[in-house]
Image (cartoon, rainbow, N blue to C red; front, side, top):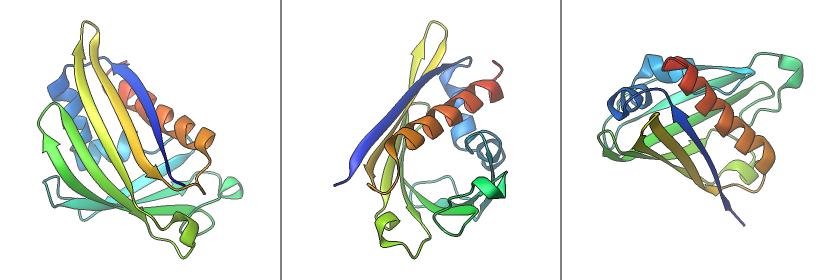
Length: 153
């Protein structure tokens, strides 16, 4: 049975700056990988129907439990909906031979202005059961913390 995982963080930027960080190849490579990983993006097209391929590599190979191989997760992302400065919906699937990770997830990023910046919420729907929920939520929060630092915190 698949599930939904979420994380929310207020970042120190207005919605247009946060949106730009969600739709820039260089920005995504900087902040999206959770702590302990680095990322490299190929074939980037931030438009509906476009997407990208991201390779996430564990910094410490001895800790790796990758989905694509022992030290990497490779994910293909497709932009399904983009509402400028408000919402981005992405479909993502891992490159893997393990059927327990084969189903695709839907990631919805929403931006809501607040007095202190922008509340960014990420909701992952259809998360494969093989992905540990606690680890996944920790990773989502780590990415949002990275985003806050990227935007000036």
